[in-house]
Length: 119
Picture 1: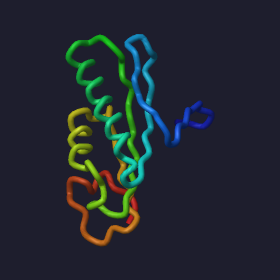
Picture 2 (picture 1 turned 90 degrees about the horizontal axis):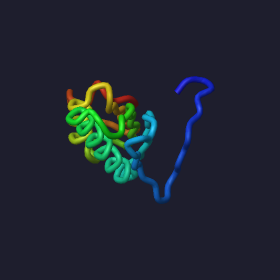
Picture 3 (picture 1 turned 45 degrees about the horizontal axis):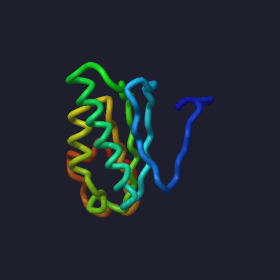
């Protein structure tokens, strides 16, 4: 987003991402903390399916980029971290993630290091 951008925000409750083929592409920002990643990970998998379908068929909904911001105490509490890294590698520049760690005490593995902020 840039200064003056219009955004929609949804916190808690029932939410989903189900674009239709004629809908305009959107850029998504997903923000999760701890186990709150569960519904957002499902949305992330759906987005990966949309990107895969778009690349294979060239029609249907044209997915924009997605940025996931995911906070946890430490890397052991980052659920689905390997799956998220795999999605970023499968769709570079289309699916991005930043992990924020608040109480990390041990060394962070090399695969996660470029995507981690915090202590």
